[in-house]
Length: 233
Ligand SMILES: N[C@@H](CCC(=O)N[C@@H](CS)C(=O)NCC(=O)O)C(=O)O
Image 1 (cartoon, rainbow, N blue to C red):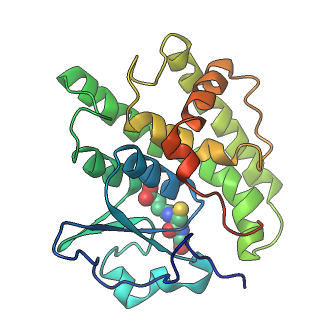
Image 2: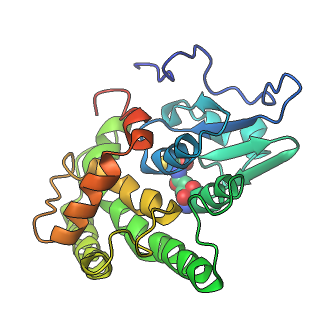
């Protein structure tokens, strides 16, 4: 098994407390290359937050071990550790990170903030969940050695993805970014799975507004800094 290492770091899957050296330090446990990792990392990098990255390889099962389950009883990645606090669910993590520099990647008015909540809820209910089906069947199964894609699951995932993509494309038809004219955590959250579009043979041609918006997000320095899938899928 090719080990997963974070660039510049030799330690992986370690659940020791973040090394703060006296200062507030956050430690992010991620499966490098995954959309949820990209979400959290793009937000942290865009805000230039000091963050230690602990790369985890799901093939080792370390995220199901008692030590990690103390951080996240769901046995899922990512998890953010800060002081005596462990936070899971990527959309909660990005909102917590964004609060470190209020207003930079978050709306400041009440309407904008509830629209942020709306789109992050929609992400989990419709967008991320459709992508998960497609990415699992086409990439993750192969990565985990779990056999061939199931055509029925793949078809269902693609249909769900098409329905959700039409909604997002409609929103972007009249808006530069998802919440209007300002880049927010919602853009990084919703763009994250698109890093798998080519690998999953999902074309953005039917969704021209998503394609235009995605080119813009992809070009950000924060996005460019996040490594892709560390091993051949
Ligand atoms: N809704 C969660 C999903 C977390 C999740 O399923 N993460 C994947 C990696 S991206 C995972 O932990 N997979 C390993 C497993 O399910 O055993 C989030 O957004 O953080």
